Image 1 (cartoon, rainbow, N blue to C red):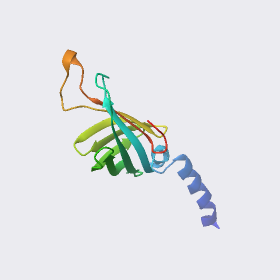
Image 2 (image 1 turned 180 degrees about the vertical axis):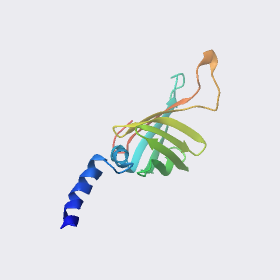
Image 3 (image 1 turned 120 degrees about the vertical axis):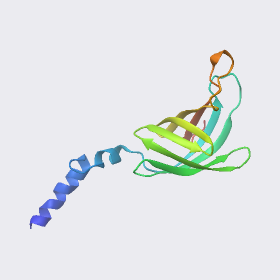
Length: 137
């Protein structure tokens, strides 16, 4: 009989994260498979155009991110690694590093071009935007 009454208490503890390390953070962590349409545009707006692609990632409950990025114009496939803590996201798309956020299913980030600073002290980086595949950028 005693075992029968422990299950509801454990289930309740798991739901509210009491006494189970990491339960509360795992509940708020975005996990699962995602597919995004992406655009990489000049951050300062001086250059027109965008580099477009498709990002497909898997986010584990630990926050580890793995997947692939396919460039729209060349079809080239690039391995992706990264991490997610809360809404803060970082991705390495090959040799390009992106820091940003994952909020409401959308990624908003920034990637520098090395350490270069353009004319007038303007950073020559890129704005990285990713929306769910079924949406348009």
